Structures are given as structure tokens and as C-alpha cells.
Image 1 (spheres, rainbow, N blue to C red):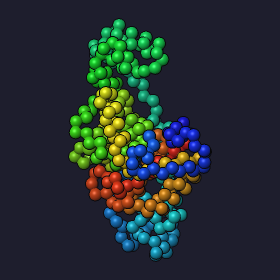
Image 2: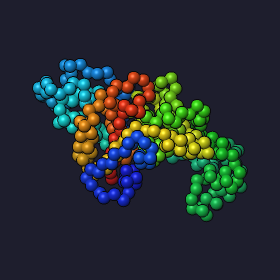
Image 3: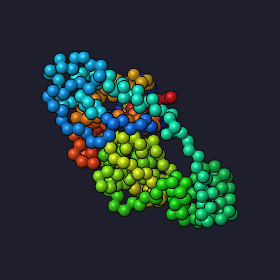
Image 4: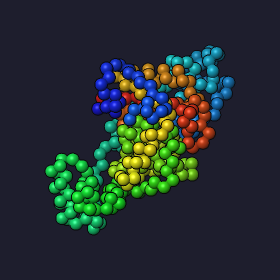
Length: 321
């Protein structure tokens, strides 16, 4: 089921249903396996010149639109001379993103079971593991790590270390975590629905992205393509992750528009219309799971972190595949 359908359950269906949320946390609702494109890397470009030509390869009349500003709208590094050219470029981008659905990058990867990892490391005994598995089976709920900690007295730190071994990733600390400073990097919807916690940016080039018990490489790639930052994913101990996530969710995020469209053409229409309305200095489209994420910069970005006041996000549900 598409994420926006889950979040907007109870609303009447429509071919392109739109909900607008401002940047206040109380007004917001709690996706890119395609290869990174050159147009989707780096910071938004500087203001175009007065002789800017249309970026739509099929346009033959860009020079005729003398009264249209050459500085906006810009989509993936190129200016469009008309609404029709914006739509053509957005349509190509949507096709590019949807073409990657179901690729090998999203396929399930078999991993060594957590209990075997901990047993091999000597962090639990076979008796402890058996009793935790029995309790999990009887309850019919809860992760194995939860039962090892709550019932068998195993250290939560050891469970997190085992999860790190299982996912071949680091365990990330939460020191110097500034929730307010990082909210412009990831939409609030993704933090809430996918459990992605932006932790810090190192040297203006590397974003550390935390998860509680499993990584999300598809989401990490989407964020990497959108921000131009290299993303290093890791795990955060659960008892530390949850309050940190709550602090992030209570912080101020950029405004976001949520759209549920019933067809690819409805998605193209909604996305291109938004670009024409906002007329951004730069905009970019990536996919993350069952959503298309359009980010629009109202003015060129001057550093590694976008300014909350100068960006707008649009998240469009892809629908059933």
C-alpha cells in the first residue's frame, strides 16, 4: 500500500488529491533506486544569464518567449521556456525514476539471523536464545532483540552491536546531535514513516544517517541524490534513537505538499504545475520507495545545508505497481 494512502486513510479517492502542510510540526503528516544522474548532484546552480536557452531538447521556440524570465523555473539544472517544456522535462524525469522500480537495489538481501550472530559472538547462550525465541513465538509479536533484553537480561548495547554486524554497518553515537539544524535535509514524512534520523554533517560533504534496527539503502540513496552529500548509514541504540527521533519530529521542517495521484500522467501534471507555480531557482526529482520527492529551491543554495525558509518539498504517491 502506498505510503500516502496509509497516511491519508479515510479521505475520498481522487485522480490527483493534494494536501498542503506548512512548516509547523503540528500541521505536517507523519521516496530513488535509479542510478544517480549528473543533474541530481551538487548544489543548486547560480542564476542563469539573459540568453539562457530552453533545456527541453524537443523545444524549437525557446527564443520566442521574450517576456518569460530566464532565471526561473529551473528543473534539474535547466531552464524551461514554457509550461509545456516544463511538463516534457518532468515527464522524462518521472519515467526515469519509475523505470528503476523493483530493481536489484531494492531486492531482499538474506542476512545471518540475529540470534546466530549473537550466539557466534558468545553474547548469548543457546538456552537464552531458545527461551527468547519461544517467548517471541508465544507472543506472536516483538523482535528477538526485544525479548533478549527484556526477558533474558542481555545488554541492549550488545543487541545493537549484533545488528551492526548483521547489516555490516557502524553503530553511530548521538553526541552533538542538533535536531533543528538538520530538518531541511530530510522531509518529516520520511523521518516518521521510514525511521530515518539525520545525525550530523561532517566536513560539509558527509551525512550520517541513523536507523534503529535495520538500514534503508533505497532511502539513503534518494537523500544522497537529492542533497549531493555522501550518506553513511548506521544504527543507533533503540533507547537513544526513539527520544532523538521525537525531538526531530517536533522541530520545524520546510513546507511540504502531499499528492496522491492515480496515474503517471496525473503525477506529471501535478509536479509540473507545482514547478510552474513556485518558479524555483532549482528543483530536483528523486524516488524513494513508493513516493516521488520533488524539492524546489526558491534561491540558490549557498552551503552544504539548505535553508528551511528557502525550500519547498512535494511528495507524490506512486500508487500500486
